[in-house]
Image 1 (cartoon, one colour):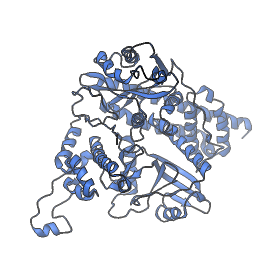
Image 2 (cartoon, one colour):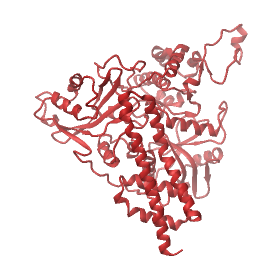
Image 3 (spheres, one colour):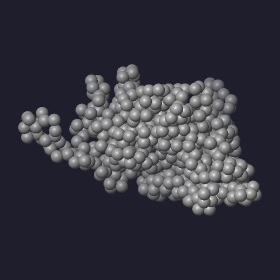
Image 4 (tube, rainbow, N blue to C red):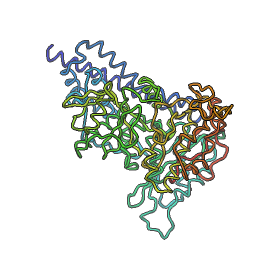
Length: 592
């Protein structure tokens, strides 16, 4: 094939990929735009359906592009030289593409699929180990500035609400203004003028997630110091109202936590949006911000780059993660990094009765489900390749003996067919063993609340041992062992039948029939792993978890379509009590 014909083929390949990328972004935006109408009309079922549809959009359009190119290129679809030429041609067109970093990720997805890339190939992929500067957001286009000096807090709050997308929908805007004023008022006159609010910057698009909506911005003082600002808005049965104000770092970190589902934010400038958010969330990786906005594929790209940079900078190696080894997963991490890798074992120890296919299905189920602040975001990586020297010898032994279906190891490389990557947390059992009495008490209370929050979102964790829960860097308890998760509505909660004799009670096997989905809550007390004072703390706050009534009542509300909302912030004290029937009044924001 001549040079000119090769170039033509590369250009045609690039045109197909760019068409696919634009189709993906258009479809993503189309779905995202529905969020406002869903919120105003209270169509929470439709919102969840949109969430799932949007999660599937990338893979759906990627597969269409891959199929089209495989047909048009034939045997040349795996041609190394073709993809080098295509990358060069693609680069020349990036200045005409919105969010070029995301376009590069889409290109990588295509070339990895057709080019059969294992590990990473800098010649055929966009790797950019050195982070590319984010474009600065522009006032008036990406965010609106509201001057705060020489005007009353009431006028400032009124202007903010009047400029928002909800301005025509607030039930009582004057009441909302009164509730906002204490949070946007200057300190006492005797305080330094440096601490007074100079202006408020508010992002133009609203952030939607589940049953909540948020106006996100920052307050800026005269000396340029910024603080996060999030105005939480809900739609209860009487209309739309301001429900909470977040104006501290902990609160905004909880709102953007990796334990939540993704936001729906309508914008054509994702990079500028991330550039605005990142200074407000300096503890969050850029990858996590992209993921939180629904661009999880690009978030995976950024995670891989973070990992490569970390290894190059510190020469850390992977080691077996602390804690009780999992029966289903081999788990490892680099001690100085905050990511953990999970690989499905070839065989599962008793009493596990699940299969490899079922485990993959459970992770896929959680990926599409409302994680309600209690389940970590987990990204699936395929065809990873590392130097063998990056792995501790004991970890190599574990992988060689327990994960041969997923891992290939030779003298030089470790190639992983599939790994689940998520943020590392401290296992709850280890945390309780090391924590102060006050911290342990707080964690146990949150442990019970985590189980309830999962139930409210129609998830039963299955195995509720302490080792299957973890504590985040914000002190939040989350559940990370997905292999026995099932919809709460599929469980059959029963009371234990009375024993007919003393011998029945002593028998090693139950004296009554137990079906596959039968759950006996009164037995939880013996399996939670809590003793002494911590058990007393748990029982004083969450004894209802040991009753059939709690579980059946929650099932009834889910099956009746009654929405239940876990608020990721502290609600305003004067929040209306007539919120959506059945919504929980539990506040995720807590000080433990």
